[in-house]
Length: 260
Image 1 (cartoon, rainbow, N blue to C red):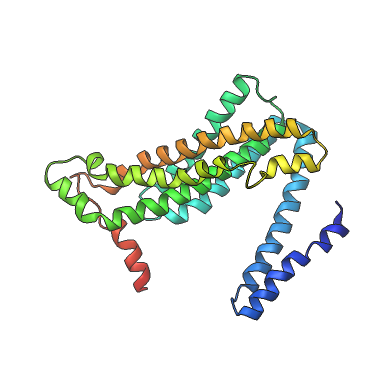
Image 2 (cartoon, one colour):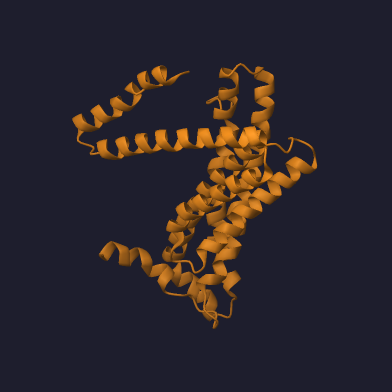
């Protein structure tokens, strides 16, 4: 693959643009912006990674991981602005995922402590954790808004905030983790995962590619459950005041947005 063949592949960008124009979907601008950003961002990251890989300096590796966490937090926090302290809760979640996964991988000697392994795997774990956090926050705020009366009823009967929010919390955790679990049930039958396909295209032995892909799948399972559960248990206390009353802003934020 070179820049010439890559430029020829832009035909796959023109097709949706043309369809959007014909069908009046008004997606042309977003498609062009997404394409330009992806090209610029990926090329920039590519050159940065080349420098980091060549240097093999742990400080650069840590800086790359910190950058990933900052970017993931900035993106995910937009979905949880009604939850007090959502920024630090997301940071704690992403750092925990990174520490847990890398401690196991390095502690058991599953991967070597090199930039070639640490940065790509960290990116996959933090990125997946970000997506799951967004799914959880979307579902959690919706669950609270639609079940406000039930939550307040439990509180009025002497229930604790944890008891009042338990059903909504569990439902949100399950809903955000189900896509990861379900996708793994058909892996290899319906789709060939990106990491495995990339290794095969690069000339790696298919069996070795499968082994690495299975490693990533196992990591994603941990990431899915830990991210949603940890973020959930960090978030729910913020929905109540010191008198154990449900805060109103979490349930009115959507309505206020619609009115505006």
